[in-house]
Length: 184
Image 1 (cartoon, rainbow, N blue to C red):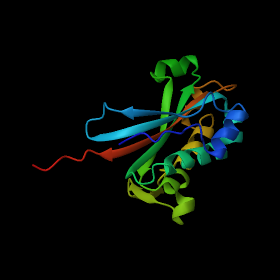
Image 2: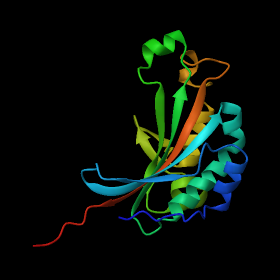
Image 3: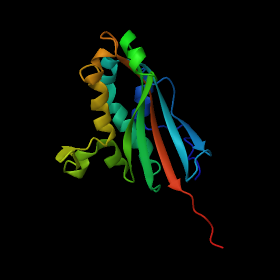
Image 4: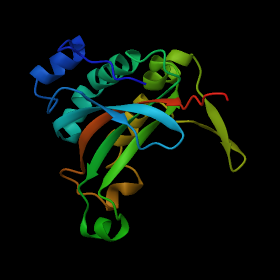
């Protein structure tokens, strides 16, 4: 799998986010040679000063940026995306949560639109059974945005500081293709 260079032609939404000071830089692509069962590319979009209020304001444009980046590799079979979030832990949180950076990863999908927007595109809510009850699956990147925005209100409220509970560091879109082994 080869990296598709930008040639300084980024999507409109990425340029707008960069001009508004939301991005710490333009997206960077890195070929992943360390994977065992697949070849891949990681597209990292670094975010700047992404506090909860700013993340809430720019969540929708960030989803569109993820969609545009994943769409560039439409022919590749596996795409997934994640947000890296730095938790601003309290003293109790430092004892309970060993890693300050938490990943919120959307489940892999072949279609960029479904990966990012999920149930809105599918037209139904995916579910699965947990302990005999049918519950909604939170698999898209839009669902992960909701999870991040609710960090301070959920089970983690005792472990993160109230003023600035977290800071979103980066949006990473991962493109994968299983190795094609030559037939002998």
